[in-house]
Length: 181
Image 1: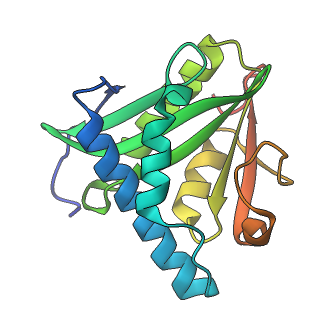
Image 2: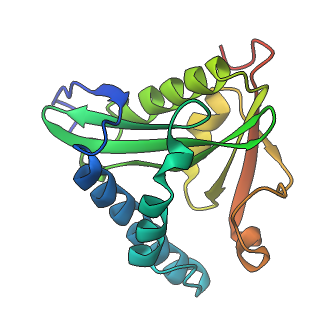
Image 3: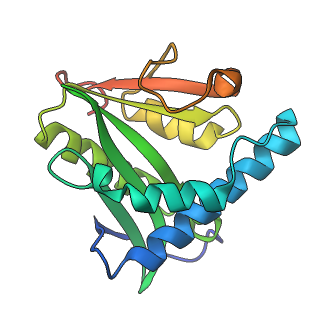
């Protein structure tokens, strides 16, 4: 995105089934990009993006209320970002598949998605939110830290296989305090 162009971003809960095509597209773009970066940087290929998207679509209920959330960011009529929330413990949620199309990065979509997910996690009664993120996603880490996330050790509920954990950063945000506000 060029600095002289203003982009209006709207974030809302995904509407199923009408948003399914955008969800699949954004998940596939995110997972393909992540796989390519992991291959280039570490020589590993963590998953098949198509298979992972198919598995996520088959289990999409985990990202639905009352304990989950799936949100989309829009620039005009086009979905340009996505973020998901799922419950991983009695008072713990996890952010998954957060991604913003490179063409609209730095327009506030990532922060808007994150704020939407944090509000949803708090309203669902969670005391904390966790996430994992590849080490190369330094802009995402800066966003998360600015919102009150701190680095933690890998957590048992993470879907990340042990072989790939060294390539990721694990983070947590306490929702019971004013951190990140």
